[in-house]
Amino acid sequence: MSSRGRDCWLALLPLVVLLLSGCSSNTVRTTEVTPVIAGDPGMPEDQLLDVGVRLFDPNSAALTEEEIFTSPEIRKAEARFMPTVLAGTLQKSGHWGAVRVAPSETGVSDIVVDGKILESTGEKLALEISISDASGAHWYTKQYEGFASKYSYDAKVAPEPFQDVYNRITNDLAIARAKLSPAEAKRLRTISELRFAESFAPKAFSGFLEKDKNGRFSVRRLPAENDPMLVRIRSIRERDNLFVDTLQDYYNGFSRQMSAPYQDWRKESYTESIAYRELRAQATGRTIAGVASIIAGIAAQTGDSYATRAAGTVGIIGGAAMVKSGFDKRAESKMHAETLKELGGSLGAEIEPQVIELEDHSVTLTGSVQDQYTQWREILHGIYEAETGSI
Image 1 (tube, rainbow, N blue to C red):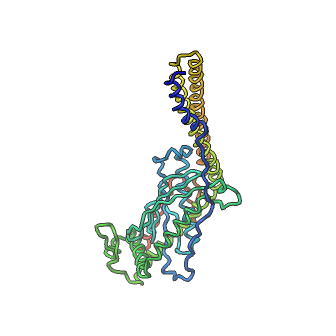
Image 2: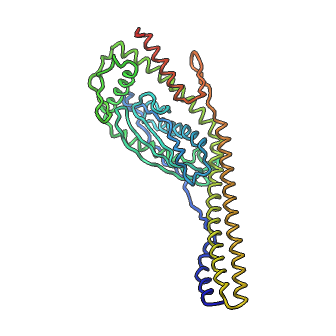
Image 3: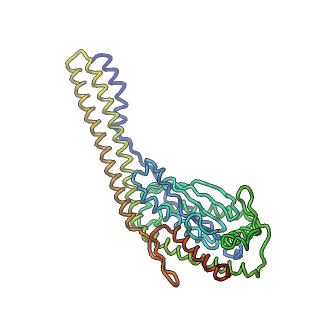
């Protein structure tokens, strides 16, 4: 072999060996869960703020390469499932009054939780959580991420692989709440009530709240406690809360219905994600190594002996085989992706909306819950107008 050919082989040999040795690695994940900070059971009722957890932004347009198994149908389902898990965690913490899942931009809660799904696979969950209150003040926006291990999907482990994420969100919100004085907490409850009242009777309740240029509300004056208009509004609000509580039955039923197939999907996604990543790494390694072998083989063709040229030919043929093997690996990884997308489609078919039974009639949630809630608010407006004689 000529010195040029030999030098080329020697230069490329470490690269070929490295790439052929495989690119996969094992990452150890923990199954430990952050404990929830328990609330004070003796906190006065007028200090227990109500929380509205809005449906999350599915953020489907920003699906990452790691989420190749996730279809928009799965993301839409997750955007309803995850707020339910978070609301349940918040309620169990004991820091709050009523914690409800609600369609976005509906009703008025003392505290509002908005969420966006940044990434969601069987391995990783990343959320962006924003907290605001009835006055329009923005408390904070924070990103949370958690990783599952293969043990997270063991039947002996807690059923929610990413419960640690929800617990950390719950703890941060409790810490932020603890910074409010009793007077500030009472002020938020008053503002949420007056905002609700103004949305039903703007003429009767205008002037009680003041809104600044930043969209923040403050109390200008208060109605009398025995004001008949306020009494009626409180009755209407109780009915509205009862309807939203009925929606909780829908969301909880939705989550229960989704839980088993979603857990199976995430478990499969965890396994397939690792397999896909390893196959992709192997494909890249084999392709590069194959190209390197071809280049070295071509260089060997310049040798001055038959043996050197023959070795170069073998290198070219072997390199071509490696490149083909790399392409085959990519095709195999695509097959894994398609399998998971099919699972996503079947998951969506299992979580259709249900019928909600009310006291005197039933509501079929065939469209969005937002539409159903809008219709309910129109009914409440009709009830209020009939009671006050303003029709």
